[in-house]
Image (tube, rainbow, N blue to C red; front, side, top):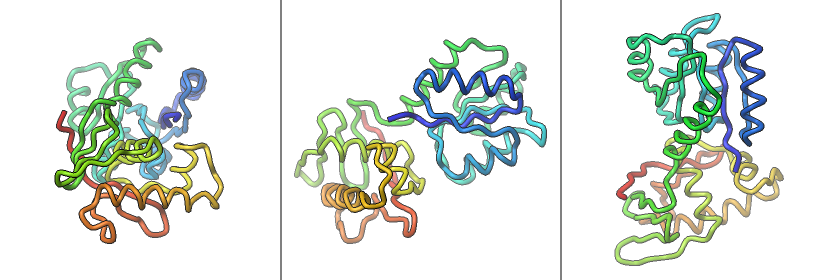
Length: 230
């Protein structure tokens, strides 16, 4: 799966150069050049990580960051800015940023920080995550609930990992199909719904009244909760 990065940067030359190099590294890149554009794009929930310039022509990039966190989004945010003073860094991190890089910066360092943030955003292969009353062991690909244990298929594992990295966010069916399996046909949504139904039987206390893997009517699905135990 390609991670999708939203780059909010008003310097057109820098934005083009960064976008080119990020795509060369295998990322998909969305671009915005103002607070208004960045806020709208960020709140759509389409990005797996946000690269955020704080000095934008129509305001402070921290407005975007605060809007994201106020909306409950946990998407990783890495601030890119010419501000190097400690007070600026503290303000950015205090507003919910996950990391901070001061311009000028090296691409190798930036890519390493991006990779680290994306790894932390989703469960590692050996982690156990509690969802509702179920324990999901991603390393063993198993779900344990009430003394019973069931295996997860590779497709179920990918789906659960993807939703967990975006927990609390509504994810469209079309995006799930495209990002997970490279399918954009609406006719494939039944396959996705079948995967969800099987996951609910393993996750939920009452699959007919899901509390963990919930349907967002007219959109797709949302995963609630998620606590790492190991």
